[in-house]
Each structure stands twice: as structure tokens, then as C-alpha cells.
Amino acid sequence: MTAVARLPEGSYDAVWASPGRVNLIGEHTDYNDGFVLPFALPHSTVVAATRRDRPEWTVWSETTGETVRFGAGERVEGWAAYVAGIVWVLREAGHDVPGADLKVTSDVPLGAGLSSSAAIECAAMAALVDLAGADLPMQLRPRLAQRAENEYVGAPTGIMDQAASTLCRAGHALFLDCRSLATEHVPFDLAADGLAMLVVDSKAPHAHVSGEYAARRRSCEEAAKILGVAALRDVDVDGLPDALAKLDDEVMRKRVRHVVTEDQRVLDTVAALRAGDVRAVGPLMTASHESMRDDYEITVPQVDTAVRVALEHGAYGARMTGGGFGGCVLALVDEEHCDGVAAAVRAAFAANGFPPPDTFVVAPGEGTRDVSG
Image 1 (tube, rainbow, N blue to C red):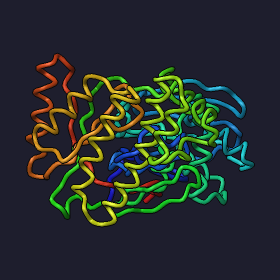
Image 2 (cartoon, one colour):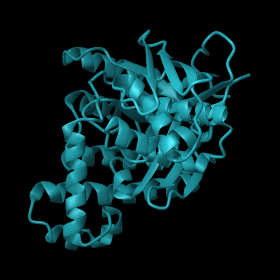
Image 3 (cartoon, helix red, strand yellow):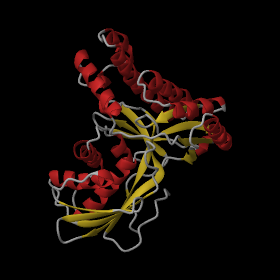
Image 4 (cartoon, rainbow, N blue to C red):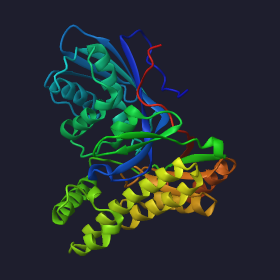
């Protein structure tokens, strides 16, 4: 059973948990209508809610110790915007969201590219939907949560994070078509093959609301217009040379090459997992990292070092996961070699003068769930 962050003390009307996520493969493909393959972390955010009799909300965070209050239509900034955005988007969608006091606890690492923002959004949505008694199927929630982050918070993210946090199943990766929102739960049992997924939190700052993320999204959208397609998902690997020949800008060509080849790597990874060949995923992970480093240009020295050292010490594959410019690295390793690979990465960070990384092992966990008791 997937563990949850420590529950807030007290009695509540609704208590829901949503996990952070790592993306096994498929980076920056989501907002290009492409394919992604995330899985849920054992780390989660819990939102405990008590109904109020007025359309006002308070939200308290154990992490910051702050309490933020807001009314309907009020603008909220900072961490509480992720909760206020959910209230806003549910009301915009026609749901009668009652006032509530919300308490938030979390063990999802912040700023590490593990989607702590989606975790709080999805847990808050589940708690508020529960209080409202609203009919809102899980499959429809990721799009609303994405809208809250895009339009209220102001982060131009795709739908992968919210879909993973809401829909993932333990022991599986979530194969998501970001255009149709069709999903498939692909078995991903690492332990059965004597494998482990080592996560290295590089401690390099990671932020989605950065100009760099937005610039790459704009470049992809502009390229799609030049190529006459709805999104870069509509360019396949076989058609890539012709597509690149139509683009005059070298930077744009690199961005397109990453997205198109990354979509294919997702499809190849799913095929390998369906066939039960988990080790075959390793080289695809490494190729994904090289593409992010060279074509999408979103890696930093800390994550490049973690990938290189993990591969040198026997990892089957390694890649940065998340939006980039910091965050975490995934390394697919033999379970018995996990400690050695982690030690080697820590030593390399020390030798390069980087802050010590956090290292931990993860297995695919459960998506949004009721943890009220």
C-alpha cells in the first residue's frame, strides 16, 4: 500500500491524498499533444478539509506554517494560489464549492521537479469535490487542474503532472496520450526483475514559471504553425528530416527534433514494458537525457553529472526527469547496486563542489485517493 504524508491532527469532513510523480520518459511532449509515461511516487500531499457555512476559504500549510484566507474571486499569490486556483476553476466549471478550512501536509520534495504543485492541486480538488458532493469523474479532473495552473497560477504546464497525480495505479506506469487523454496502465514491476529506480535530487533549483520553459513552448508552437500541423505530435520520426528542412532557425530545429524523437522513445518504452523487457528501457532513458541536454538544452551540470556517474557505475539508463534546469535524475539499476551508485553520485557531487544530493529509491505508487480512515 502506498504510504501518505503524516495526516493533519483532528477530525475533518474530507481527507484526500495525491502523489508527486516522476516521468519515466516523455519530457516536454505533453504540451505538444504527444505521449508521456509517468508513474506516481510514494510521496504525497494530503489535504484535510472542514466545511464552512460561508463562501470563504482558509488554507494552512505545515511546510510553511502559514495560513492564507481568501474569498470567492479574490486573487491569491504564492503557494496558496495552487489551492485558490482549484476553488476558482471548480466554480468556473459550475460546481457549488462550499467554503472550507483546509490543512495541507506533504512529503513531496519541493522544487525538485517531482510535481509538488500538481500534488496539492489534485488533493485540494478531491477534498473540495468531496465536500461539494459534486459529480466529477477522476478522468475529467486533470484538465481542470491544468487549467487552474495555467490560467490562475500562470504556469504554462501541460497536462501530464495532473493526470499522473490523479490517475496513476500502484505497480504501473501511466501511458497517456496528451491529445485524446486516453490512458493505459502499463505494468512496471521493478522488483520482480531485481531492479530499482534510484532518484537523485540534484538540489539545483527548479521552477516551471520560468521564461525558459515558456520560451520552449512558444518555439514548439511556432514550429507547428510553420509546418502546418496542429502540434508537433503530428510529425513522426520518418517525416522528421523533411520537417527540419522546412525550418530556417537552427534552435527551432533542435527543439522539434527533441519532441519528435522523444515521442517515439515513449512508444518504444511502452512496447518494451508490454513485452516484459524492463532493462531495454535503460538505453531509451539515456537517449532521452542526451536529447534534453543537446537539443532541448534544459539540463544543468548537476544533473548531467548524476547521469554520467550512474551510467559509469552500471546503471542500465539514466535521465533527468521534469521540466529541466535542475530537479531530479532517474537511474535504472540492479537493486543490489543501488547503494553503490548513490554513493558514487554523492562523491562526484562533492568533487565538483555541488551541494550534496538526496538519493532515494521509488516504486510506482497510487494516484489520488481517500485517506479519511
